[in-house]
Structures are given as structure tokens and as C-alpha cells.
Amino acid sequence: MVRFFFRFLFLVFVLVAVVVLWAYFAAWRSPETFSISADRDNSYALMSWQDYEVKAAEILPPYILQKEPFNEGAAFFFGAEHGRLPGDSQYRLIQKTWDEFGPTVALVEGRLGFLFPYFEDPTEKFGEPGFVAQLARRNDVPHYSWELSKSDEIALLREKYSKEQVALFIILRPYWGSVETIRLPGADDIVTGLIEDRGTRQGIEGAISSVADIDRIWERDFPDAADWRDQSFGLALPGYFSGLFVDANNIRDTHMLNTVMELTENGERVYVAAGWSHVVRIQPVLENY
Image: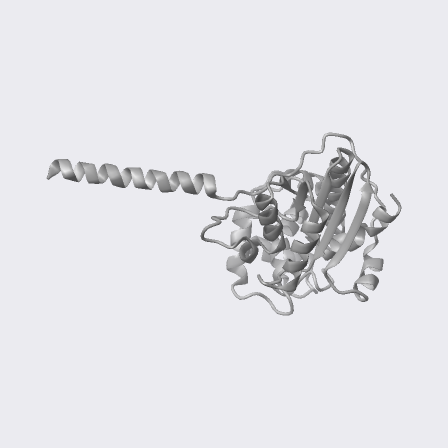
């Protein structure tokens, strides 16, 4: 009986070890950012936000741009509308354009995260970046995030804004991106999680440690503005946040362009998935390149 018990424990241990190892190797991890090796241009003539707002009122997403030839390769930009549900026609169009373009490298917006492919749907969990990552894995095409590193983005913003201002923006950015017309239920709990996840990043660590800190800063800096819980990127953000929003997007779009430039100079056919505002705003650069 004792021998049987130990054999049973051994089999359980082996089974657990196999499951853990399978999960470790099968799980998706955040795509790496592409390391730009050369000094690149940081002064692209992106479309201004004023011109973008005019153009955005005239078009509907998705917004597509293709540049072929582009340097020694080619580039395809799919400007998606975030939040489309699995099965939406947008994903069929991504599939179609992916197959027609035949990319050798894919770039996706955001950093995605862990995903267990047999139990989770990448499109349901991550939207169009997850769908494109799935296509890349299916076709054995390398894929990267077109975002710059977290520390690099913060360092560039800190050249113009205070540590506290940047910390507030980095922490609240995902929340404001999710708010439409009314505050999200459980706003404080959501932002508490964002503080834990983002508030310790290099360059802003220690600036904000609680929702009470955010309330204090907001009351001090924006006494006449609506509560931060009721703000969103669909509204005009108060004070220095309007500048932070523009500068952060310019930094991101510039890095995306530099990544595409370097890859196409190496002869790659690059498929880029991004929110449609990013693609609209880089159009003048592609037209004049």
C-alpha cells in the first residue's frame, strides 16, 4: 500500500511537470520590440492633430496604406478600429490583405501578453494585434511590437514633462482609452491595478502610489475640470494632458516609422497593424518619401 501511494504521488508529480512544461513552451509571450540599430530620423512631418480631426470626420475605418516598393522592400499599413469582436468583417479584410501582400515581417500595436492558445482566443483577448500575431505564427513569420520600450518612451516624455505628470499620464492612459461617454464601473479598482502595473516603471517609480495620490494631484492641477474618472481620449483632456497625448503619439508614430524604415531597407515586406489614427497621421510621410 505504501509503495502504491508513492508510485501514485510520483505519477501525479510527472503529470503536473508535463502540464507545466507544456504550458511554458506553448504559451504566447509578449512580442519583442524591434531593436533599431541605426540612428534614425526623429523629425517626420506627421499630419497635425488638427488636420487629422478634419480627415477623420470624412472617412471610416479601417484605413489602409500600401507603399511598394519601399526602400528595398515594401510596407502595408492596416489602420484598424480597436474593439471589433471576433468574426467582424475587419478580420476577414486583415486575412485577405495579409495573404495578398505576403509579408516577411509583422508589426503589431501594443505589447499583448501571455496567452494559452488552446484555451484562449487571441482575437478575443487582444483584438487585431492578436489576430495578426496568430497569422504570423501560422505562416512562421517573425512578428514584433512596433512600440518603443517602456523606459524609452518615459525618458523621451520626461525631456518635456515632470516625473509626476508623466506618471499620471502613463497610469491613466489605458483607463482613458477605454472610457466612452461615462466613467467605467469600478474605476478606482481598475486604476489601482494600473498603478501596481505601471507606477513602478523606470523613470516614474514612486511618483504615484495610490488613487488618493491621483485625486490629490487632480484637485491641485485641474480644480475646474471634470473628475479624472470622467475623462477620456474622446474628449479634450485638460491642461498639460493635451500636450502629453500629442507628444506621446508623435513619439510612438515616429518609432513605428523608424522600425518600418529599417526593416524595408533590409528588403523586408512589412505588415503593420495599428489603430487607424496612427495610419492616417503617417500618410504625408509616405507620400513625400
